[in-house]
Length: 390
Image 1 (cartoon, rainbow, N blue to C red):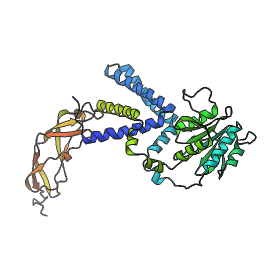
Image 2 (image 1 turned 45 degrees about the horizontal axis):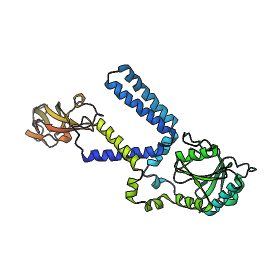
Image 3 (image 1 turned 90 degrees about the vertical axis):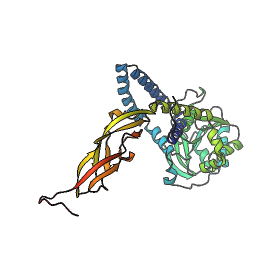
Image 4 (image 1 turned 135 degrees about the vertical axis):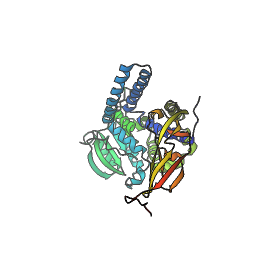
């Protein structure tokens, strides 16, 4: 029988779908995705072996999973840090907003095709929203204005800075002779050399834009989001740079909500299906109702009174479990803790509210055997035999 969906469950599924899809978009072109898929496969084997009663195999996989999780965090700490930075909704509020110099993209495009005509290899990195400090190594600081003549002079073979990439950040040429991470994708054509693999490797890990000039073929390519596209002429390169280097907010205004929802439809549908199946597996105990006997305790009794009698001393509760991630209600030390702050001398009736029963998330009170407790309070007796009077 299918579980009953609460509004909280729908919100739970949608939030997890959004988070998982964002992580998928980030890791899909990196080695981390392959490692995560391997860990998920081991997790499936662990669940199967545990349910089949294969104690040794499930125990080994359980212990191995803890070690692999630590190794995953250590090996992919840069990717994890960058992914968390991407998911931060407040980063635009706290990041320092710097307005850089305006780059003459037409002049840059002309210089790039000038290098291509002379078959001089070049690699230009344009930083966008995400920081690239974790991926760019051994750069020589320049912090100069961007000009076509400067770019040409850097990449001519006689220049000491020609080997590597230049980083254009905040409208300035920040670094030269940078080393970039190489792509490990098996789909990169064999005829692409180190320069193309470096450009692809950086865009697989960040939102950077990389312009690549082939030394052998004199071709110009542009790499974004782990994809490589050849650019035929200066005008097309200028158009690509102009559209891709616009502020993200300006680009977002041009995209309708419908286009955002249905772009990359099949990956989004696949992620939704995975999250929904996982939610069903986690909450397959939804609707399970168990009866638990809970003792009744009291607090906040006025100082002038003492508790003489109470009835009953325990009550039967019917608890409903919504998730398989929490312990069974049978294993919980459930207590009904009643507030006696408003109790007066003599007989009192104290109502049992669901808020008086402390339960972990995922377990709720379905019904109570009794909804009230009879409490008798007496005034305290002093040592001299007289009653304490307020």
